[in-house]
Length: 203
Image 1: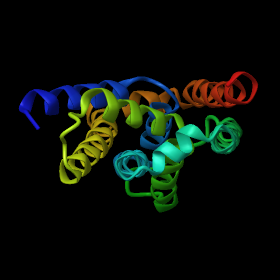
Image 2: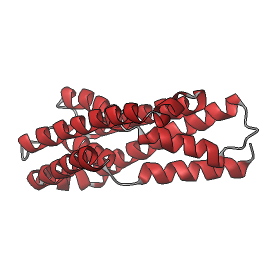
Image 3: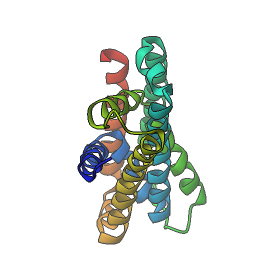
Image 4: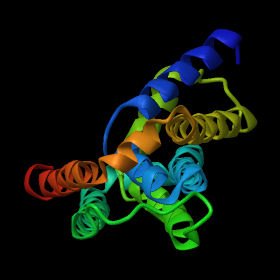
């Protein structure tokens, strides 16, 4: 593969990762509530979830998900239920005291799982990577190059959300959000519940 192909694929993956949505909301929530480590683990979990679909696209598994509407819908409903649960939990604990970075290990452990499930329960990622391979990956690319593309996509996604968590934790933004945690929790809960209801009603 030529350098231009790699740069194009990296740019497309970076654009997809940086798009705002429930994934970023979960990273923000966990960084503010659990500190830097929880935010970083959320980003890593999200990247692994994306990586499963990326490597699945290389292996042909993602095609099964993309072409099976019933399977897609089942995964989407699972994702909607998870987002709804997270939103209601966030609303339930809105305004609760925020833990320090080293103070709440359960927030850190749950951050990884939440990041993973937010991405894994989104079958549209499978469609995205199939389109990526079909549109930007040269036909002559061998299996090793395809696997490297999948790894690149996973690394970019995880890297973006880890960067977002670190930026929040080190810039003072997390501290400011901590001081306004009641409204932050309400806004994030509203976003998560809204996305969940949208998936159920309109997708």
